[in-house]
Length: 82
Length: 394
Image (cartoon, rainbow over all chains, first blue to last red):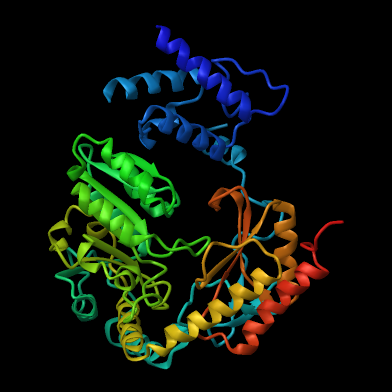
């Protein structure tokens, strides 16, 4: 549980860095519709996570990732699988 | 609203209020001139690298074949769609590459989709360069394989991702000889070293490098001296060979065992005999005229360096594709119209199809461009920078 909270905090911080100033970001914000990230920014975000945790995100699952919560779940799965 | 109406109502096309997509290009009796929007232009956005679309041998072979065999095969290669020119082109390409066998596809897109989905399945891993062509991504999706992207042209990142796999021998790595948007080449020697060390397999898409790179024009794998380390080569006839079609071949494996598994091969009508005949004639021209490649690369070098000197942001290396980056889509559209008005047609690439946060004015050079036409291309870009929409602000 602690790990999940750490992931969510880290991800929220990264998303805040990419979002325009004044955008409210929470774990259930839609990264495209609510936060306004482009597909290139989402790929940059994923690359940072891959390097930080030494994992690879499969493209097959990316369409399912809409929010920080979705990303945290995928991150947990990939780190556990490692 | 039903599904179709809803879908159409929500779809957005790049520059949909203008007349950009599907612009009518009237080719005018040769590979490098035509008419666009009523303006006579030098064609510098056609991928016609060796300018063979009007070569007399290719035109004659095509006309003879249509007269003899008709307009189409009306059948798949696995049924009634194998004519003498299909079999002959497979033999000739196999000989040209020193390949064990060749599979012909009706388009280059189908070649990638067919061979990737035949090689990979749900128990397989695919590692794609991040800037891979849509046909490679679509082949990966169709295969159902677990698919990862690695950073563009980054052998170290590829190494890292192969290391993360429990069984890298179950992985196929896919790169391109020349990337279609910025014209850069894969660092193939480094990629081969990584792939071989992990025991993975390697596919190289030579769509834009076939006929362009290598002593004999076989592509990047030949130029890099690594042909025997590549498992599969995919290519197209719609660029250097000046017609349409695709192929997959291997110097190491008998790919023809995949003819039934490659569904775009098994379930598409084969190319018309006239297309196969012109591809054969073009291959012969390429083999007998290495000077075409020299002319192409001279034109590419002159244009790349001139545009670089004018201050344009380009791809990282000289290539027949010169991608001029424009960071605003309205400006890109204005610039594209400006170039047409000044007698030069290039491709306008929207953000959605670009490899970075920019649109592209994509120039493709041809061996058939005369020195005067190359000068005209450079002059139009000079004016675009000095008096046109891309003049520096302030």
